Length: 90
Image (cartoon, rainbow, N blue to C red; front, side, top):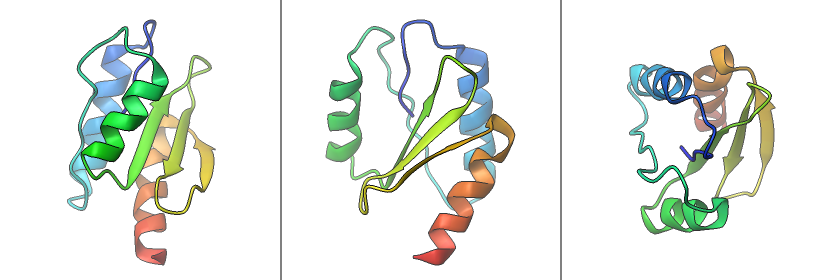
């Protein structure tokens, strides 16, 4: 999961917990609040991440499949379900 400097850490932690609760995914939260988005994406790639989630300022979650390049937006409540659907469609 990537984060912006004004990101709601509580909401981010909630999304991470919901994704972990699926039992399918490990979740890393990028440790630095002030890193540029590109650096965070490179970090995700170096860790072998399949998906990257970003909490947008509007309160939605951007989801990117690093393998296919597919992207979409989701509500916070549905982000974990979206990842699970994508994973079963692979």
